[in-house]
Length: 194
Ligand SMILES: Cc1cc2nc3c(=O)[nH]c(=O)nc-3n(C[C@H](O)[C@H](O)[C@H](O)COP(=O)(O)O)c2cc1C
Image 1 (cartoon, rainbow, N blue to C red):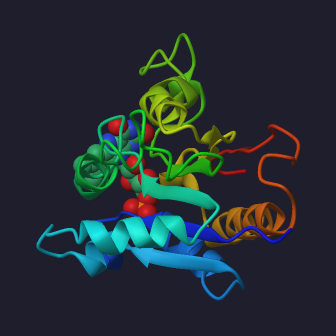
Image 2 (image 1 turned 45 degrees about the vertical axis):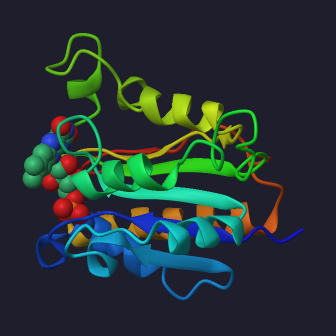
């Protein structure tokens, strides 16, 4: 059964983006994939909660696509979570609107994979830094999918970016065409310079 996918893109400086711009181009125009640029929609941060909740209801797979900023997401996606994932809608006894949907984090990071290893600067993997999103999915009774992680963005040349964008597109198409989460778990890590 076709899964409808909502990509929530959070990048505050679209014109300076390379990695997310490439992923965005890859996601744009895929049938049954809705690309929703949060900074474009809400430059003043005044998020329309009813509109966002209605969008969630119309989709099966929700993608948080963003650069990693300070080991988390850019501010608007946090604001979005704070306002849109309301008690009684997303969680709580009567909050079952998102139950059974899937959540995918698709993130880009300046840091290389070794920098996110046990001996690296950041000590923990990005999968660990994404735990709050995983916990949010669980609280909302959503299925947490293995994240798509693009490491070492500063080292990626245009050809590498294009390859990763193609992989992202294939991932979205696979999620759309199959039962969400049925695809194999990793490998989904992409590496700078790869
Ligand atoms: C405010 C800010 C915070 C950042 N924090 C991190 C971080 O915590 N970890 C990391 O690996 N990279 C960090 N970076 C680098 C970005 O993740 C990287 O530039 C981005 O993923 C590249 O994607 P883009 O070309 O779409 O901007 C940060 C960049 C900025 C501007």
